[in-house]
Image 1 (cartoon, chains in turn brown, red):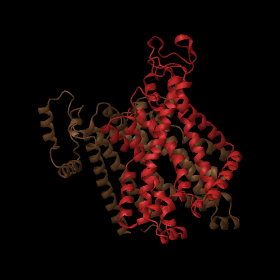
Image 2 (cartoon, helix red, strand yellow):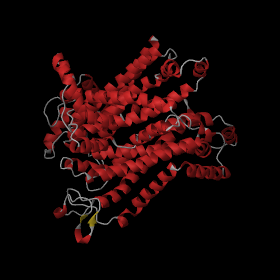
Image 3 (cartoon, helix red, strand yellow):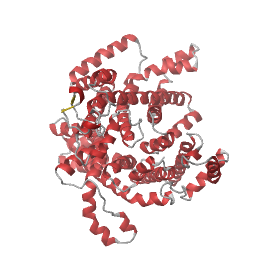
Image 4 (tube, one colour):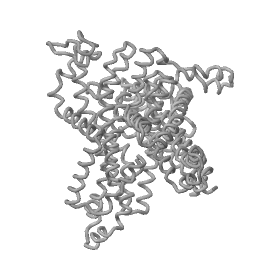
Length: 324
Length: 306
């Protein structure tokens, strides 16, 4: 068990170093990176000065080590448009993004499991057909378009849900204000419904199909047949025998799904003017604010990697067969 | 996606084998109905992509400030009709949609070719040689998958700048791992087969064994992956165009049309968002249906598990 944990930890460290290497390459790939940090009207002397100040006149390997050292201290340099540390800006926007991602994940996984189980239990019936058709559509709709359509229909036409705005949950918690966080919950969820569903719908569809096939596989196993032949009620067979084994793949998918949903949230935030990292990145793209883009991408990647590490460790704990 | 058909990998591909499989495919498609419809839709999309310039009623980039944001079926310039309305610059939505098919399909297919070629070569090398080369290539893939793809794409496109070639490269490089993993797994099992042994005994060069003996037997699973992949690449292209990282604004793509529709949302100019979005959904759905059907066809064991 301990060797597994240590190996897995080392792996994560290597992957994080890989991530920083890729982001470093991304900086260099377009030629002299100095030009990413200067305004178009800068004189050659100014450019030379900035190149020296940022260390771009050094050999590449020195540049990378400096870059790595800075990142490890959370220093991505100053944002070019806000004139404050990029990391602070990103961390300020992070809670809103996490809230939306967690919400969409609860929506996606929470519905995917019952949908998938029902489709498997009623295989070949219209219930199955209906759920699977919906899932097929769900995997073919761009999330931001779904967001736009929901804004048009549920927001502007029916007027049921707000089409923009955000009530913070994590921020008051971090500031130790539990009462505010608690009273904010209902309105916070109300604002998250449209963007959360738009992001989560693809995951819901994909995972409903996964749960269905995982369930069908388990239902065909010998021990399920044995349980049935013993005369145990179908309900007990499904709950005690099938579900218990079918939920293992679900744990793995939670980790991977989080990263995927994060990617979706980044896009959907611009549709709903959600004050998170996605909108930050979108504005940074338009203003060519490289430090903010880099800080955002690396912070999100590290969260994703850490989460996958945790999921793997939990998985090893609940499934004794994993002792790699 | 990880359920890989290996039914095709048992015997080396020959001509008669192939035509028999083709007939089987034809019968199965007619029987299944949905794939047939999907194929018909894709055929239309391809025709539109090729003949778009002749089919479109108006010049897709012709601005007409007097007739901006006209609703569907509104009269256009010179007695023409804005069948799907006009956008904020008075350009015809239908014409842009038809042109967009070309760019969207071209980006999708080119990216698959880039990613598929890279991934296939990496997978062949990795599976055939094994050892440290295999380790390096596969760990590289692991690292790349540790990034949510859209973030990786954003990071590179911000530096490289938006543009057709950059977009295709980034989307393609984003896909290579998928192909490499499949090709590697297949190569691992194939390299021990008799017909590969035979080729080796005949003194064929390593490159010839990899590309002429092994590769033809991996084409079938690759086509399945590719058809799913076109779907997800078109979705990714739409997302990136939506973020302003796709092709230049004057080039119409479905994603960039949606991006431009965002500013008109509050004013309820629904036609700007509805039509390009439907074009994406119908195309991607068709690719997904074909992919599902191909997978069932190539490996009937998976059909049960859907």
